[in-house]
Image 1 (cartoon, rainbow, N blue to C red):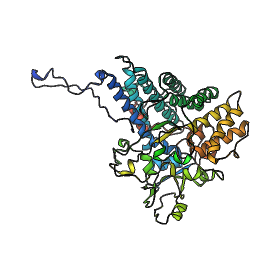
Image 2: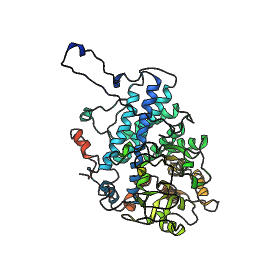
Image 3: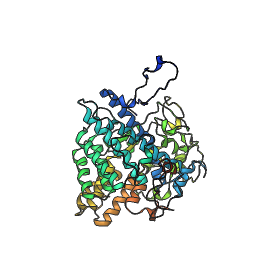
Image 4: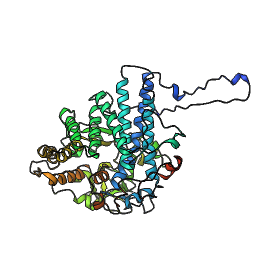
Length: 492
């Protein structure tokens, strides 16, 4: 993680059974036992970095969140290129889908790492402990929020790791209870995190408030969402950057608009044998132009290609369009040195926010898998639009406030006051939904926005109501749990 020293901690409980001579009976293992690990503040800090590290694997959540929606198509080299991604695009995914299993396993890995810290929260005392525990609880909430978004009811573990073998005694917890724990964790985080951290990349009070507001919004708790999101807006320290074009370049990372970013670096590489081992943003290379040669960008694997419908969603004069969407035909026309190959389901468009840029010689491993582009997980523009929706949909509503938040975003997009929205009621609701699409296109939110607002069946080809609102629990996980978990409805 950029600005957070990565230190993957291996804590293994080791038993030594020796049948040789009495000389070996009482030999202590040189490896730290996990039960005896937390003895200093540094131990907690190191374990916390390990919990943050799993955030880097959420590149897959972001990419599939677009591909599952009407914003992008799977792309790739052919219809057989990463079958699991193609299945999600076509809404024919099953419980055997490898990418869905990755998301399930990696997010629970994050939960377990956070719970490891919280399991031993009372072992020692030190002045900085409330902040460390608040970061751990923010991370647990973040990972569980991803899990309920994707899978609905999931096993809930609080302040205790799920150890090998315990899965056969765990049941899936109703997502309402999981949300309740997410809220509890984030309220604690809000109360114990600083507004600004000394290290870039760590969770702040504002990040916890924004995620709490989002969790409320996903449960249709609009009054609660409006209150907490407005506090983020009014107390800061966030604002919109003046130039939208700068947000997604390296110089725009961790700026005043960033409420929470997943940090990536190119200094530790990976391979296709272990994508989650990369310290880089794997989705960036996947979303790049196939066999690209030319200025500004480098080549990738042509996945996650925007649809014509997503491109057409931008109004005339919207400055965000050319920042969000790379029209490769136009780009090649403007730059005669450009050459490239077309991939499967080629649309002529690419997600310009997250495609690989030209960079220096420091990357290790496969350069397509170690792109240093941070993921802007929560931007202030997103907070403004969530607050607009919450105020509009609350009872009683405050449409004037909703308009003001929406128009802050639009004034930057058009660089004038001529495109302000003055609608009210359900017409304003629809305008906010449309604005979320164009402001946040390519950032992984679209599928879940369509599901939570009841629009998925009408907007996503192949979407089946009563089924595709969530994804299937991986079959291997059900088997590992002793077949005690029921599958999500209408999946096999």
